[in-house]
Length: 227
Ligand SMILES: [Zn+2]
Image (cartoon, rainbow, N blue to C red; front, side):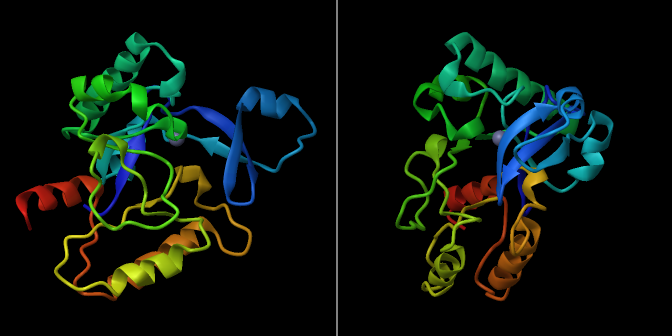
């Protein structure tokens, strides 16, 4: 598997609109409120989540990971709610896709410091933040439950960072972990959409024969087996 997707099992089929600035989604508005209001300060795009009966076709071949039941900010809820948000999402996604779910992404990148026991109780082994260090590191993260990105796809330094990674000595067990925010943000972009940029990134890394393109779960499995 090449790609991992993080899903909110309590929001399948929801219809909202997303206000954006440039490549960033800033605010979400329920469809009824958006349609009732005539003027909006931001440009909005429909954010119609995929209905449950289409999910298995859309995400065939993906590694499925959790993003909480309802896109909950883990830093702002009780321990009981954190446990429910992760456990119920993992249970729903495992049942729907027939996969063991071991990956997680923190909604809003928040709450890693208070979520460890809720994640472990649900069998989560890898959880990603939404931030990258100022200097890219290509080592496997010391704490898999608080994984930083190597580089965010919309950062200006994405391509220099990829070039630095590709120049490294073949054989080193290094990791480049890229993030592509939410599905509805793929068409965002001023000069180039996020989708076009992703294609350019894939073309760049695929020219290097010693680079293995895989989901983060598979990267960890290979790393642990010493492959
Ligand atoms: Zn999210």
